[in-house]
Image (cartoon, rainbow, N blue to C red):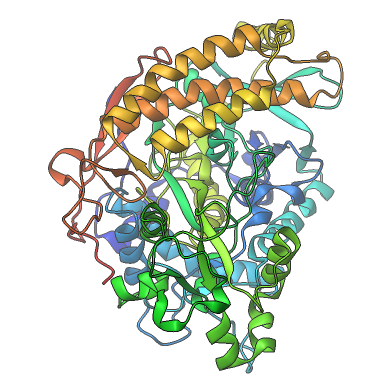
Length: 636
C-alpha cells in the first residue's frame, strides 16, 4: 500500500484553505447521526471533543484520569508559540514555519508545518476568548518571551503554568458540551484494543480501572489523543501513567508507526539523584532566557559554585553558539551538556549535571522581577532539591521529554486505518527529528480545535450513517483478545517486580538509543530486548485480580507493551544511519561534532507496518522541499 499523505496542490500559503474548501461536508442536521470516540482528554483530546460536539456530533471521551483536568498537558510549563509579531521584531508565519522545519532538521512535511504556523494565531485568539490568563505587558497587551531555536519573541505564556491554564480552557469548553448532553465523559478507562471492522476503525475495547470490567464501545470514527511513549525509558519527564498502549495496539491492528526512534531529550531537567526515583522533573526551557548555563573550566573541579571565580567558568553554549547562546534548540543544548559531563566537567555528586545560574539576571533586574517570571518554577526546584535557586545555581541535566515519532497520519490526520484519526503527540507530528520548545501545545490545540473538526467531516460524509454494531465478530474477537492478555499477565507469579523490568529496559534504551547511538550499541540492545521480554512473561509478579482496582495489572500491561515497542524503536534507529535532530549517530557527525544529516538517503518519513514485533515491514514517505532548502543546521 503506497503512503499517500493527501497533501493538497497549490502554493504553500493556500494549501489549507483550498483543502478545506474541497473537503466534503456533513449537513448540520445529519451530524447528530454520527458518533465519534475520543481517547485521551489532554489538550488535543479535550479540544477535539469540545469542537466536534459543538459542531453537532455525538462524542464519547475516555481518559485514564478521574478528570480531564489531570491530563499530562497540565505539566507543560514554558509557553505556546504563535506568529502574532506583537514585538515587531521580524516574526511572521513563514519565519515560524522555517524555524520549525529547521529545528526538526528538515525531517517534517512542509505542508503540515506551514499549516501549523498559520493556525497558531487563531489558537491564541481562541484561548484568550476562553479566558486563559496569558501574561500581559504593562499596557495590557499579551506578553511574549524568547524560546530555544528562534531569534524572535513569539512564545505566549502564563508564568510556568501555561499547559495547566490552556488545559483548563479546553476543559471548560468540553464540560459545556457535557452539560448540553453532546459529550459523554467516561473517566478511569484504559483503552486495550482498537476494533477494525469492514476495513474501518469502528470502536474500542476499554477496561474500567475501578471495577476491572471490560467494555465495548462502537462509533463511526475513533480519535486517539493519547500522548507519547517517553516512559519507555522508565525515567522521563512524563506523567507516571503515560504509556504507548493505545497507539501500540492500533499499530497491531494496521495503523503504521512512523519514526519511532525520534525522541526528544530536554536539556533542562532536575538530574537523577537516586535509584529510588520513578520519574524526572522538567524545569521549563523558558529559564534559559535569564539563566546562564556553565561548568567549571577545569575537569574534576568540586568546589561549590560560589567559590569558582568568573574566569574559571565555561559558559559553553554562549561561547560555542554566539548568535543563539543559551537559547539554542533542545537537542543542541542537550548534546553539549552531555559532552561537558563526558569530559569530566559535570557538577554535583554524580558528575551528571551542569549549572543554570540566575545571579546575573537577579543583579540586573532584581529578585522580584525574576520571581515574577519564574517564581513557581523556583519553588518547585527548591521543594525537590532543598536548594534555593536565588542563592545557588540550579543543577540541570538532559532527560527524555517528548516523542516526535507516533502513528503515521496524512494531511487530514487520518492513519493508515480508515476512520482512525490521531492527534497531538500520539501522531508522528509536525516536528521532524526534534521539537522546538513551545510547539507541543501549539500542535495539540491546532489538531483539536481547527484541523480535525474540518477533516473528519470529509471522512464521515462518505461513511454510512447507521450505528456500528458492537455485537459483530470483530468486536467479540477484540474483547476476547484483551481478556486473554489480562489473564496471561495475572497468571504470571514470578519473583521480579514490574518496575524492576521497566527500569532495566529504560536503562538499556537510554544507554543504547538515547542521546547518542551507534550501530554496535543498537545491535546489542536489539539482541537483549527479546531476552527481557521472555523473562518478563516467565518471571514477573502481578498480584491481585482483574475484578478490582489493580494498578499492578495496569502497569504490567503497559510495561509489556513498552518491552515489545522498544524493539521497534531500535529497529528504526538502526535503519536510519544518519544523525538528525535528537537522533545522534556517532558514526555520522561533522568535524565539530554536530549532527550530520544524509539527505540523499534519508530525506523521508519511515513508517513501519506490523507483521511481527521482530520483523516489521518498512515503508517510506519521501519528503519534498519546495519552499525551503535543507542545509546544515547552524546556530552560531
